[in-house]
Image (tube, rainbow, N blue to C red):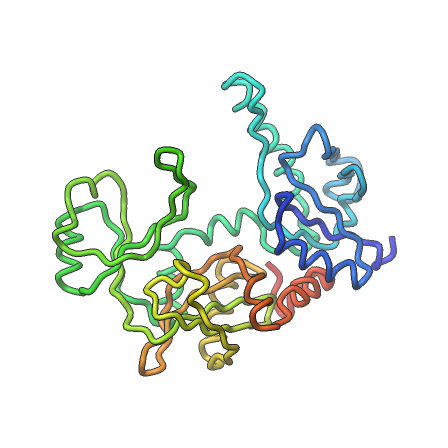
Amino acid sequence: MAETDRPVLVVTEPLDLTADMVITELNRKGVPVVRFNPADIGTDLMISAQCGVCPAPVVGQLRTPSRTAGLEHVRAVYWRRPTWPAFEHLETDDARYAAAQVRYGLGGILYALDGPLWLNHPLRDAAADYKPAQLAVAQRVGLTVPPTLVTNDPDRARQFIAAYGPVIAKTLRWTPYERDGVPMTSWAEPVAIDEIDDTLRSAPHLFQARVEKVADLRVLVVGRRVFAVRIDSGLLDWRMDYDALSYSVVNLPARLEGALLAVLDHFGLASGSFDLAQDGDGEFHWLELNPNGQWGWLEEKTGLEMSAAIADLLIRGELDGHRP
């Protein structure tokens, strides 16, 4: 197969404007794309794979209504925002069984593809999604990490707030949540000693010394390319009001860029979105890494060619000097 005929797999939900931006770039450059969602298996997705029958570890075929890809010829996999089938038409036990077969069958076949570049491999995304692990790695590579406590001990939480206040509380992981049928979300919010009670015992909570920031930064790293955007808002959590935000493209110090790349290398990621805070002295403080963070709106606001950079990396199929 000619190099130009090797496809990129794009694995995501149907309505994903960010994936659309990358696919547009791949189409413009004449690279074949096979887009699918695991939830479509059985209707719009068919997959077959064999092992132990030829020199290649895995050979097989993935088919959608409009595209076909030979698994041994895949150039790269862009793992965006896939959804898995729930089999709601089945009884509970049958649905749980069928869902497991899809995850470990379809997922297992895809995970067995060790030739393509993954952006990012879902197992590595998952490993990088634990905030305490991120904090430890960030500190290890020399980034400035705000004092942080993860605990379900109310007394320890009160001691931390007394020692490091003002303190904010943050979720350890965003999770879909509804109250009385209304979707809810959570922000980074101030927390006081008198707000801590015994309900804290039910689960670990993350408390962090508040950074006296003058601006936030969202930094997208694609391979070895760094796109840094300063976000001015005056908000504790800028995600609360996108209409209040203003954006400017900035260059990061070389040492900071190197540290962010080292974090990605540690977790074996080809790309990631970092959130940083900058204080009045110009110091950058680590907040978190989102291995599969959103960036599409930043390209629209700044003109940075983020989607083109992702498409170029998927086409190249490897990272300069490093391959997760």
